[in-house]
Length: 157
Image (cartoon, rainbow, N blue to C red):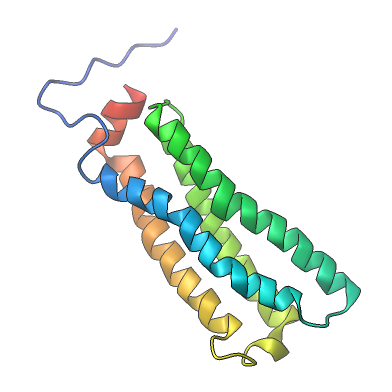
């Protein structure tokens, strides 16, 4: 037996507004940002690499398209439909993005350490900027999804 939550008071924030707009803008921008960094991955796929690294980069490309392009578009659909599970999906997506950046840093250092400084924009620069972006933006987004009255009133209650 579950106890129903009381409805939100009229003066409490509800709907797609307030600080939730920043989360929405972040999700809207994510696919374009992902497309912008796809060229870095494509450049490394053109390098003459051993077979196992080419297979790894192919898998990486698929994972990148899912996490950076497809998932944010799905999140937008769920958000605009005001589905109850949107906050949980957003937190899961944010945690996956943070974990992916950390794993990328490790894998890049092990497999592609000699390629870090071969271009004007090195792989290390891209990974470090991605880490700061992931921890900063996604970390704030996770805290907001967990604590916000607007999120609770819009999606959960």
